[in-house]
Length: 385
Picture 1 (spheres, rainbow, N blue to C red):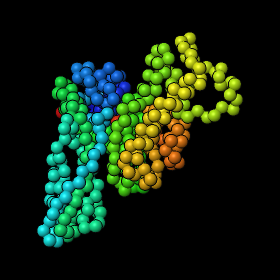
Picture 2 (cartoon, rainbow, N blue to C red; picture 1 turned 60 degrees about the horizontal axis):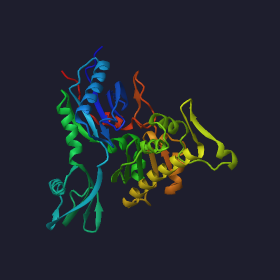
Picture 3 (cartoon, helix red, strand yellow; picture 1 turned 180 degrees about the vertical axis):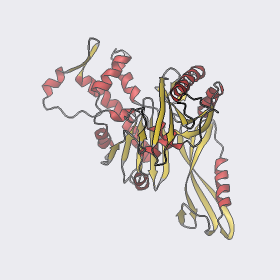
Picture 4 (tube, rainbow, N blue to C red; picture 1 turned 45 degrees about the vertical axis):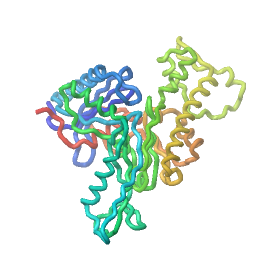
């Protein structure tokens, strides 16, 4: 039977373009009605589209697969924006008011407008997260109704290279589908992965992807810092390839034997001789593989930690780190993070906090949390009538 009411969403990832359609239930759970994915590494790199025509083809094939499952036509989809050029930048806007002026909602909106008018070269503001307002000597999140003679709005602008969104729009213009709305991938991921108390107490969400690693820092329920690091688990695979190993075999070696932090061996003599192999294809000395994997993992974690320190919230993360994304499945990834960041509280989020039901099984390995977040954020029926 054809479905007449559903929300559809698309994630443009560096390894796959993934689509999902579902229906929200009254209890907050989501019924998954359709799911499809197609490889995208030959048209998307580090979350940014580099081949428009190829991306358009993959996009259409993914949406058509959803339509087949739904037995219905899709008019529009929600789309996530993520990828390499996204980062946050702080901006303050101050307004002098007449003596003891009561702060109105209109005044707050005009401060936001002024903030959005900052000039950016080659960049555009994708979203704004108001931080606090400085009224007198107080920092407030809700200043409306308070009297003051000046107010300072503090904002976190999420910016990206102007081509990032532009290319997504161009791809959709070549299809018969519309974009219902854009959502920031890291923000929707956080909304399904993090608990309210984690966001309030202070935490960093680290999404370990294939081409990129995204860091989002929260405190007092407000996003405080966002950065995308252009390193991911594919870099580990490429490093293994440098030993004259085919890419497919390198990926298998990483998935089968890779460990983010190898426990110290009991007996050093056996380690020298141990080998890891892919049946009939290739083999590698255990100590070599361990060295390569750990070196790259350490580099990624050091970059993550650097961003957390840049955020100035490094010592305020009472809820610690929450890891998600495909690479969070690597054995001992939490231990490797502990060793470098010295943060003891680390949680690995395979799934989100939304109950999924329906006949379609979605992988619960941390790779689909952004997709579920996009679906959960969508409001309008995406059916083509």
